[in-house]
Length: 115
Image (cartoon, rainbow, N blue to C red):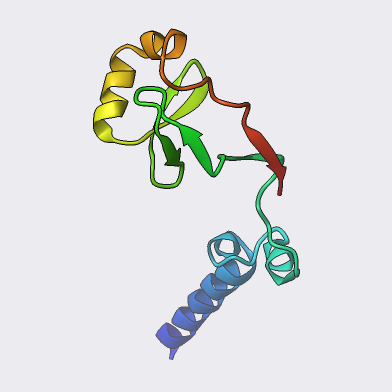
């Protein structure tokens, strides 16, 4: 009987800790997160969120590419969208040669969306 009481005591303590203490964060019950999930507005994070343009011009070959299917490369903090892996490799090998005299245009400033 003493072993059963010992087990029930620890089981109850662990249950309370998981429900209201440290484990509440793991289970999604801590720090008001349940209120955010219940709200009608979608939670997208704090601050601005970068949204890529729908299409852009490949600076290597000059093709118009859909950004969701394109290969991307970052140079000097700007994102460039390329039509294929080969164009991306050529661009990353010598980006200045495509940006100064290139077939494409310099990318437009990124659009920001408040979430």
